[in-house]
Length: 482
Image (cartoon, rainbow, N blue to C red; front, side):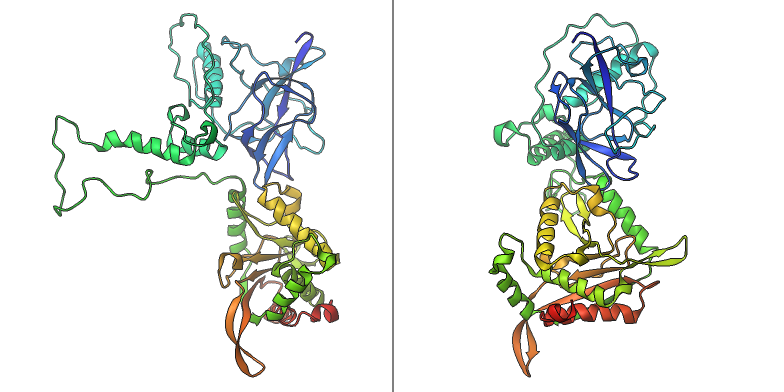
């Protein structure tokens, strides 16, 4: 490309105050043409998975980090060659005596603030990986070779000899093994070279089972006794199996704690050891609520909307908060104040493949029942797709966690940081119940309300839980109390 310059695209702050993100997947490779606004990669922060668009047109020159790398905000992750003018001296990538097909090392970062996407912050820190000390005449060559090798799934490049090597003959690039990011991560953790794995998935895709099979095949020769030496006898009982019995080909798997799970762990530890938790329980007959759910499914006003018991439970909690507004508050430790919220951002705990997240419905208190149903449906669908934005998980005031979907009767949930109450909903199932003086099978569930005892005393917590139960037992109270 004539009259071109190299632009370095840095890892942006896609949330508020985030410091790092993991590169989950690259959608482009060196040599690809990109346009302004095109998504080039997907990254995972401590709050969500986010797709990153490139802010200019050009041709990808190099990818600075392979998939699975955690990179600090403000670090350049991709170099793009764009038309027009010479690039600033600080952004020029260092010359590397390697084949042209290999990507170059990340360009040196300029001292001054560089423009990034609108709304993204800039940090001056770099990636966490500490480079090895190498001889000056070989460091650049080995770094470039290592990046290319990791991108192709072949692990780290071997160390270069100290003596000057003979001119290398460029070889045809090997085809990159086909595997999804979680499988690549598993192979990396187990030390498996994907190029040596035989794929069994559709279209030659390597599966998790293929990786485990490769580990088992590698371990088999080590477990067998040498041919020139008899196998050692069993230490005790003569009927002991000759080979160890395991549930999996790999005895252990270590999963790095990062992203959503890391943030959740830190938040729960902080919550458990900061706020004094109290949990109260109530078992309630929700037969009428279940009948109302079936009636609303036939109502044309709810056509195309998600109508389920959680919708009416959410509405019941909103009614209870309206009747007992002090429950919707937070504790300001620095100011030693209780902050009562005059709005309800209703959090819904959602279990996703990346861990537990709690997006919330903004201003849920002001929504009609059909509007609340639409918001719940959108929240659940977005969470399942892994597309929940960081802003959707900020500013919650009270939360519902539905453990009943797993067949669990109830639980003692931990507070979401910054909130004073969380309602756990147990499984709804037929149970013998005294109804109008007779024992009958009724639809019954158990509710559990955990609250911060610094600002919510037993009386207030009990009133809120009792109001939620009363609405679910007699849903007509939604009309008289709302």
